[in-house]
Length: 182
Length: 182
Image (cartoon, rainbow over all chains, first blue to last red; front, side, top):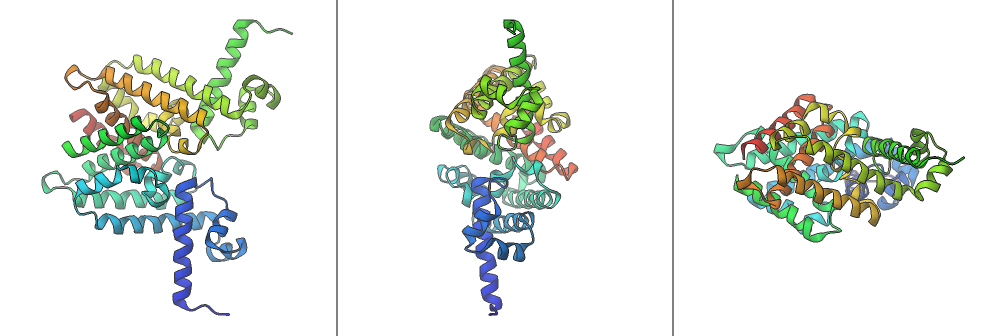
């Protein structure tokens, strides 16, 4: 049975959305092909025949997640609104739907070249977009890189220490204050 | 054969040093008990009889690594010297000997309660020490938390994108500039 082009594209989109969610929630090394296939409602074999390898699927899922975040970032309006959303309690509790850089950064040094390259592309793209939201007099990619570092560090730390919610809240608030005041 | 108390303490120290290095290099979930036993020059069984579980060993190794870093941080002198060292190319290439917070932060949300609690204790301790290095007029734990977030974010990002060394260097430099100028 042949599947129409639209249907095939729709399927692919759904698989990538599920894979991107699982990878962000459980880590690249924490998710096996079986779990990916199950979440996508496919057999192990058909997932392989479509993507070739777990690494290839990870590359596409990473790019897919970044594209979705980019669309959201374009809607963010101001840098201030973006920072307030990024460093919110809601964003802390939803790694599966949030920033792919924050969710995966710790694991990337141990990945293969293809995953590493696509991650680096995502960091470059996020930095460009942050720079484009900056007020004219401060607009610089180096300044944007420092902002990205603070955002990613604060969100990953806040998630790591959320067994102490007061400390976790203080990290988010301190980073928001620092980013807004300079 | 009985082992003297000093010898036993020395052995324990050596095992924790090796375990802390491996966990930081390969991640908590990336290192198995076999690799830990091999690095410590012990059998799987004797490692278990000494520590009880991989989680227990991880808790002790984390605390051990934090104690070693704390000693180094006390030697750092000024906040500026500490930041310059933390965000250096040398620190980027040696996760196994560096900051345990930066090396493990991404994995912590998926760990058991004991590992999570000891990680949170380390974050609190690092923050207090950073605050103690801050010049009097700026000294505040909230400001210190924002500094820790920027340090951890910049170092983890710089390691993740070091397939593009120029970008990686720029992240370290941008974070140094931001932390030194405010």
